[in-house]
Length: 259
Image 1 (cartoon, helix red, strand yellow):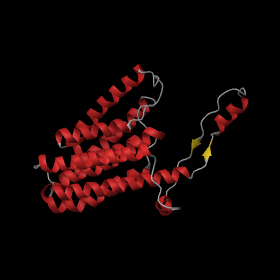
Image 2 (tube, one colour; image 1 turned 180 degrees about the horizontal axis):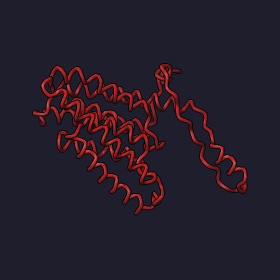
Image 3 (tube, helix red, strand yellow; image 1 turned 30 degrees about the vertical axis):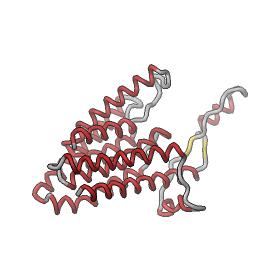
Image 4 (cartoon, one colour; image 1 turned 135 degrees about the horizontal axis):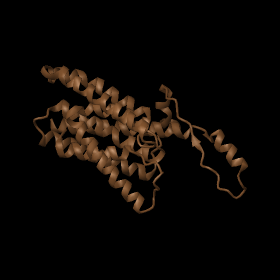
């Protein structure tokens, strides 16, 4: 099972890397636009005023989008992105091996659900860090993984299949609702992309694992926010992407608890 788990982890991370290149290719082909309110403000500003950065529109994916990275030859991302992808993929494979060899009582499908989630979190965190958005591409991929895992759960854990599925749905719905309300009450706290990511996390981790992952993620987010404020890299009103903290918190929680 150890070799199989590591092989599946490698495949999952390769899929995530390819989806990351698809998202990058789609965004690069979008025309940069400036919102109307910003354009009018820039026209009335003084000549020496610094212009606002252009804003890219959200992409609409289609089947043709998946062929974009191959047009004109397959293009690798930047060196920094490539290094980050390799490091996080190796870390995910390492955690997969650790889960399979150390937490032997959790079950193969249980561990595979965690590995699927970990393979999705690092590209989502990277995009959120760079452009403050979580592509629907990774959300749909996570939902597809969950659907594909249902037959395996039914075969290998038939006696608790419906119970596990029920609590996964409850965890997903309750976490998404809490995040949505938090985003409404506290301005610039939780984005809609984070809410969608919470849905996938709840379906993958269930009630047993979601509490620890969210708690550690909040701790990581708090420490990162304090660091950015102290070093004056961010101001109090600045928006800080939450997906990187979710990634770090979930990796730490899964490694320490197996859940």
